[in-house]
Length: 89
Image 1: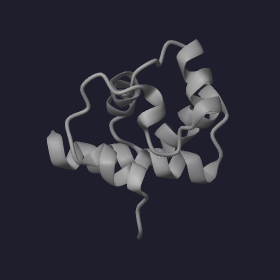
Image 2 (image 1 turned 180 degrees about the vertical axis):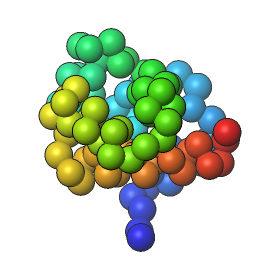
Image 3 (image 1 turned 90 degrees about the horizontal axis):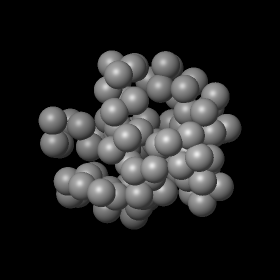
């Protein structure tokens, strides 16, 4: 699987205070929807990812329901968070 530059950049370093839009698959529109629901930083979305026990189906469904992410967007975001966790947790 090939990854985007955004993906490589995200998983290359600690999350810190990165904005939610820094997550792969989350652009300006989805980022704004997530922010409106209180998910303003990438680490807040990571928290939800962990609450859902890193389960791909549950996380992707949550992302779809929360901000309207399509299949590719939710898959990309899940992959980004999974790889970040593998590197840093």
